[in-house]
Image 1 (cartoon, helix red, strand yellow):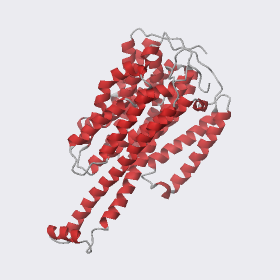
Image 2: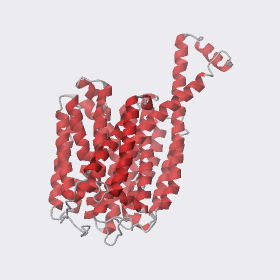
Image 3: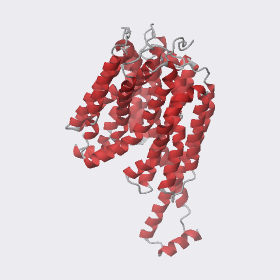
Length: 511
């Protein structure tokens, strides 16, 4: 197949801005609606539990679309797929804002999630196409900055728009951005020649993928609400998902025209890179969940202030990205990834020393320190993931790696809340045992309060709860810290040289 890696648009700057804006909009949309859920549910007259389907429907369809990116690319071409996805994402964003009922909103969010699927992998692929081989690390560094900053900005922006305007505007703001991105990318890249392949449609693979991934995403999104395997529907969906996914892998490996190219995992760098990307992103995502949640529920922060405490994490990546992109190809990328995991691991171990008296400045400073690790995370690992792929394999590999990254985030989202609450229950029970008539210190404390009245016991229980959540938070940060340090070992199983993806002469996966 002819390699289409060398192409220079009329304006590299304009094309890069449009591609980055589209991706920023898409990544932003995965988090911007979260803080507006209570308002949306109230305005549309449904319960909070029903409102969470606004998030779940997007996540399910997004997870289904991501592995299909490679097949869509072969069928329609990289440019048509990207521009079409952006246009349809923009249309469904408008429809989400225009929805008059929860049913309409859930349907439009599902469609929005599906059309969002190919956008990030295609942006990654097209950036690698338009940048010269020597500058591709700059393109990946730029994309990593977008990936980091957008989830931080999302909740803050969503909260501000919902408070000052109305919730439909969190979707309407996508419309001008989407139109600009689609028009500019099309005009800048339409002269590029593309080859499409009309291969037979793997219907069995599609059905198994939709069933397996769709049910798995619902289980991850709804597991906490339904108390996991205590609920029959979670058990049934988990079993069906497992059967469908195992059948999918077996079918795809034996299919001549698979809907998802799982054979890419034969390549060591793709397999190791995807594994570290998935686990590293899951741990990174877990930090972004547990820290704001702890600050808001136990430390009295508002949503805005919790967002501001977390925001410094994006400051250093903004400053360091140009330098990383320029000089990264002079260093073994495994060293940069190791530096990333070490910094993020140490930041978690520092947080494991927090107490309930920790102040805003300390939280923000640790977040800023972690930003060093975040800056060195995405670009080196993405380069390793794609290093041995060329031609259509780049789009297939990018879509598959992004799917596992997003799935890692979904697992982190579910398991973080579950582990955090379970450890709180454990620590609460342990601490409560100390409050008894046989403990002189406890009795002396109650005596100073004015005796063991119902009101004073409730106040003590509130203090115990706060300390139990603090101990649970410390436990989780210890777990994340040592998890990052373990990844420092895993990344060294990747094998150099890390050929720039898409470069002429790069070997095919599995060779």
